[in-house]
Length: 342
Image 1 (cartoon, rainbow, N blue to C red):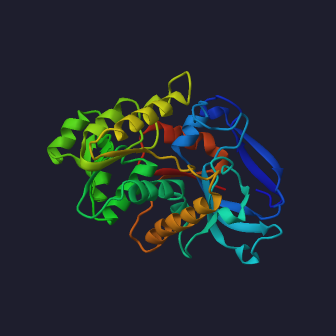
Image 2 (spheres, one colour):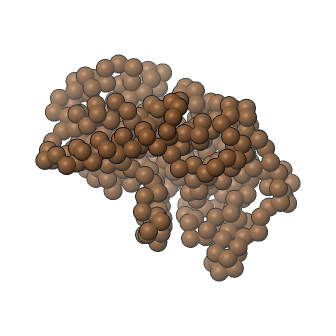
């Protein structure tokens, strides 16, 4: 890779993974308040899997460069930025644009990465870590001694969420394919086969219900999750993975979840439901959003730096093999996050 050119992976439309395109362009110059990050690691999240199908509820028009987050070194800083940022390793949440060798972001949006932390390891907990931390502590407010259910505990968010819940002193029940159960047990998670009768299996472990459920599946699973809550429990829905391959409106599955949550919250039953959106509140309270991002992600990265949180890296691919990385991530056969490197 030449030092004066940028490599980007372009999603041109609704395509198979092999339809991703590689584009070369000059490395951009940062504007006022911006920095250029030389990417060291980015990742494949569920969002990109939805985006290539045109199913992510607020994705930009095609063509665009996907990539929800990244870790890298600040290579250039524009006017109005702190020069101390130059040469620093930082993490950034981008939603799109991360699948590139060099990425322009607002300097106010970067979060320092602790010294000595491997970039790929840090990358596993950027969008996954901020999502897990905020759902666990800002929504469900999980405490020591409680029992929680994590759907898809082998996935990128799931493995991070389960570890953070264990770190908080909670018992964790996690759904996954049997091929992942041994790994989940190593992380202190009680595994359940997601093909089985999940509500019945959970009831055997927690007859009185669970204190929190984290559900990325949507559709019928959200109703099952709500019924599994103990008195005073909290449901946090954060996606609709079960409708990934559906056709029709991409907003409708989310709207249906929101309607259910609003209806349940209107009932005097002592339980609460949320639909978590990582970007909620940013348009109206950008500074508050940035402060929470820095604080929450900073705590997750520090937990990893101290050895309390282990990186779950499913595989590493060079950026040029983004199609292979996406294909593997979509296969459902891996534990953790698929990483792309320069």
